[in-house]
Length: 253
Image 1 (cartoon, rainbow, N blue to C red):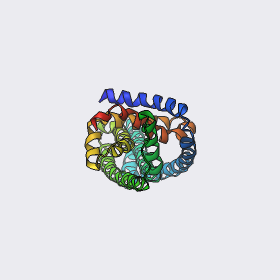
Image 2 (image 1 turned 180 degrees about the vertical axis):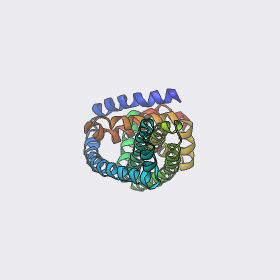
Image 3 (image 1 turned 90 degrees about the vertical axis):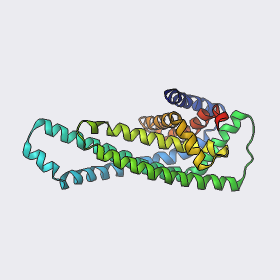
Image 4 (image 1 turned 60 degrees about the horizontal axis):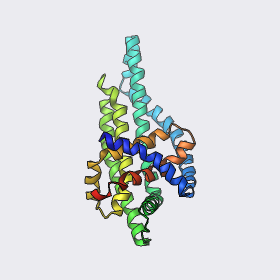
């Protein structure tokens, strides 16, 4: 799996070169700007909502009052640490919901961009079919909803884990890995669908190659640490990188 993660990382570098060489910027910049604007607005409101939600949870359970009565520095530290972990988990959860909405809205673009990438690499054109495009969009939406459901289940489990002392400190990392896997999963599925894998077969195939999914999703999230430019480039770079990373594994489809 580690080898696949490294390949997924390297695919982003190859994706940048590929996009520049074949002048695909019009498929990157315009949707990227829209994504950036939605991301900025969403994160602002998500941040405020997460703060209020965690504050309500800690107050309603009586945890805040108990810590104040104990008046111990180490308890205050653990309290603030728990507050931060819960806030981070909620932000990751909110972002995952935003991400799936974007995956649904952007599914026509992602399907086309993945197909365009492979057609250039393979040196052949995939015949355009409106019927097939609609099928791709429907499949993308169904898969996004499926992944959103499973990720929600895992995220709720991780939130409960965060209340366990010491062990709960790794909760944000676990949540991030789940986020990375399911986002990368969606990006890889465009290639699986193009090679006639059913949804069930795609799930089995990607489960055998978790490293590709985790690596792809991880760099996608990492790009968000670069304000503006990273936000603009992240979504489309992810689908091109996913297509490149699987292209050399196509004999396994």
